[in-house]
Length: 69
Image (cartoon, rainbow, N blue to C red; front, side):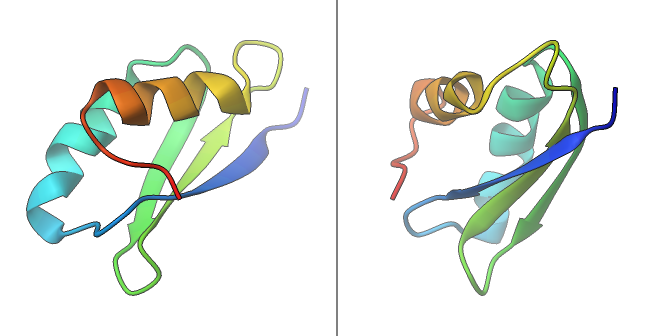
């Protein structure tokens, strides 16, 4: 099955936040790749939709202590 891409806006994303946020997102099953755009304050996640869903990523971001916009 082809991967899908999710884009999540994270409030006030800073470069020092990236390791923690990447670890949180990579812990979700099916994640293939995580990238960030600090200028737009977003996380871009490529994932296998048969293993995870956008809600899983939102929960991971919130659990890591970040606010989703």
